[in-house]
Image 1 (spheres, rainbow, N blue to C red):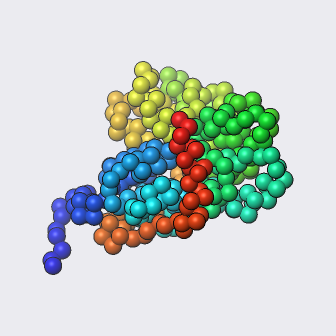
Image 2: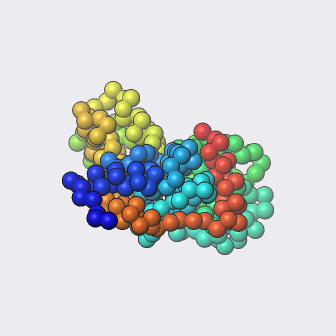
Image 3: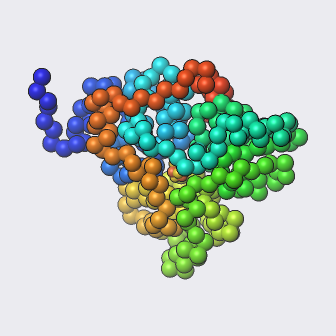
Length: 309
Ligand code: SF4
């Protein structure tokens, strides 16, 4: 059969979505064109919830690999695809399941709280998952007499430790290479250049402890996108991966946004392109499937994360 001719790649994607009974979910750090093509756009927590609720047969997950794994664990009967199987996460790669097992042996009373930016194999060794949106609530839900082993993001963990005042919270020393590029010197300069701007900071930022006193709000990406809509402020300095600015500008065309660092770009997130989205929907590639036994073990901490808002 002759291949249909489309006016543009967006039309082609829409037709393929209908044909494949597919939805596209995209993370806030994706390139703008993918954000525009997405049915659901959000942070890891909301994307996981949406993936579970959709009745589509195919979920094309435009983000990084661990996010698609989470969707696959939550929706074992659906086909979860990624546009590029090489799009991983440096932070997730900073801890392995054997590291978690060894750490637990050193803290037999310990409860492992895994940031959602971890592989399914690491989640399977954990007690709770969390995102930057609910990490504090998750830790507060754990009885005070239990030690908390927080993996893998040191900065998010430090923030939660400070907020909860929890002395028995131990930190893994992982970090996100994109967020450590955000420097407090840049933030101070931007605050001077834009004195009316509110400053929003993501807790993965490497300069969090140095700069948090300058922040108007410390928020997850989803919290940021909500906040900029509601705030009467007209200008914002945004300390997280720069992809989020596309959504902020689109949803608030009258407001102005300045990235805390132009260099805070996740090259894994940017590996997905519209052309790869087309190939993925056309060929139903690349499927992410977590082995059943592993998925069952990883599901429990994910369910606990979803239960705590
Ligand atoms: Fe991982 Fe950082 Fe990229 Fe997020 S921005 S996917 S934490 S490397």
